[in-house]
Image: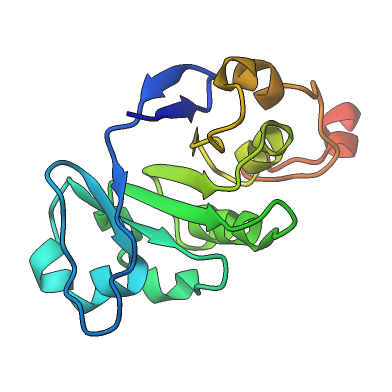
Length: 167
């Protein structure tokens, strides 16, 4: 079972299974236990999945989180896939889910997640991270708090540094 890193830097077993998108014409096959399914399939089968605490969704970096408007807090976990290191669209999705849509539950980063991205993901509202398999999870706690102060406002503080210094 892979590990998941919490925003406090603790490492825990990840009991959520990311279910890949089925091939065209195939049906969605859910394994036992908590699962993360593609967002559009959850929306299409919402009457079957609504209220379940063992079904969450994952979004690709090109998915529009607006599709979950009004529904986000029905989901125990929302994961955002970072398909490659240089694709930053997931950061925007995280901020939108937290700030515009008011998502309160676990927001998880999956895919090509590297240690040097963790603090930036945390500032955008992510609170769980599935590191790429070739990375050392024991270094995550240090990477989550690498900077003691940040200049910009974000989901972790709504006051920029110049205003914090003035008060």
